[in-house]
Image (tube, rainbow, N blue to C red; front, top):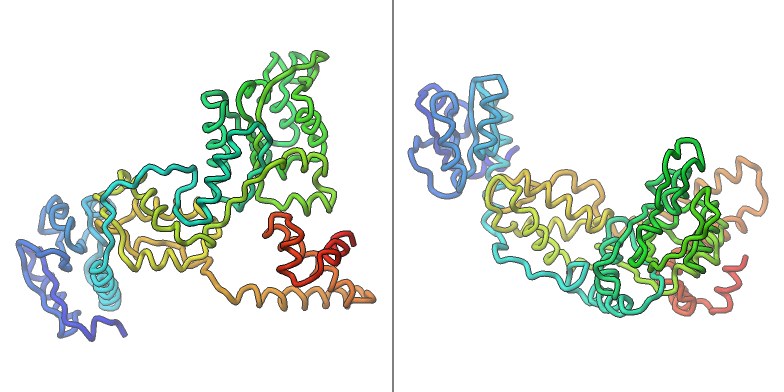
Length: 452
């Protein structure tokens, strides 16, 4: 049962075909009124007959109304034309009752949502930090960024995917004495392992098959500026030793060369991995880990700083509103509520892409929940963590029983300890005293557990 049955609504019809009005009367509930119109008041539901009216008239009517184009034509040109002029939807005759009632229900809900909107026509103030926001947690990040940019030490930027680690690295370079000098990005996850060494250090002509000419490496190109090792946790072990030597001496040998190259670069690294856990697992060199993390900046996930959502929405609206079919004046309150209730596993990058999509597909001057697609895929659920324990423990025990293992309880406790300790140490940025306090155990106990 659709909501429209409990409501009285007026539909304005732009048509020169009497049969369309008759067709509508036979399909709509008695509460609906069909009025032929030459001018529509703001926020009316309008049906526009593409077959008897000129499609160019859609543009002026759809600007302030909810317009649905109707046609008997089955080819794509009128559909695309109506959509480009601003039609909310295009439907085909003969009309089907269920589909028509479902669409009208959506249009009425859309109209109600549009009654509560937030104006965002004023330009967003230029951010003073690389990360947009005004929450206390992001202010602390900005203050630390400003301080670290003034000292020549390696910086490790940590945070989840899409939190803005590269922006932080660029801001450090721009605020430092190396402003205007090269800022070279090396994505350790994107470059194949077989090519990474030659990309970093360069090579001499004839040093390997295909080396038809000498090539400078990224470290040489960055001389005098900054080099940013993005996703440094993906760096293969075979190269970690060579990178460590470079960090210690600021020198390296291009592939096939016996001449040492000296450069002056500042190193900034970033990762979304738990490097300390990788060190304990033997997947990342401990000496390299300590060398790149002389100082650190951790960027919190978006779900931990929901107060920054409004500034971020305003910022991205200003950046992308020019891509919309019509002027975007702001958002509905329901739109903001839905964004606020979402967990944002992809962080700021996901928010940016969600807003870009909503702006490009918007059907009015305000972004609404009807412009959001696929946002329910990862809803925020507080109970998720409590469900995870049982769902992980039972398969572990089943697997142990199938393998006829002994001392299953001891193995289970070790697994849980390892997972819990890794997570809490990441949360406290390797502060063992704080980790012990949060876990409710003695610091000495924590150290013993870490050593087992």
